[in-house]
Image (cartoon, rainbow, N blue to C red; front, side, top):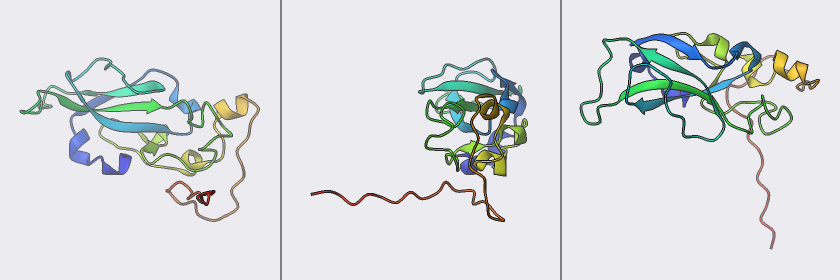
Amino acid sequence: MSSLITDDEISHETALVWLEEIDRLDYIRQSLDRLRTRKGKPAYHRDGRMVGYAVLGPTAKASRASGTFRRRVFWLLPHDRDSQPEGLYTTGAPAEAVDPRTLKPRVKGHRTERSEGGPPSTEVEDKGMGLPSYQGEHRSPSPPVRPRRAPTA
């Protein structure tokens, strides 16, 4: 989760490499992955797609135990808002999500009103779909709690 990434874990970043246009995305997911190299495009083993990754400087040290480097990887899943604007994350966002416009090398980024569900990104507008309007003064950074259905007998 984004909130678990600490400043010292990303202190050796020198650049963020984007594989697609991030200005069109309301949020992206970020994680710290153990990778064999400081730079270069990492292998991707999740559902969905990789959106970007961090490059580490020469002072970054590999783990003594595994020989790997911890680097940020940015990604989206097939059910995220960019692919399904009316889906699970019409409002709210996954726990590891941040607004990509708030990311920089050595800056973990944060959630914004846009990443939480409005106003819509240009991608959503281009598809002719809007997001529900928000009526309150403050938007919680956590996804909405969805009531559970009672089990049927």
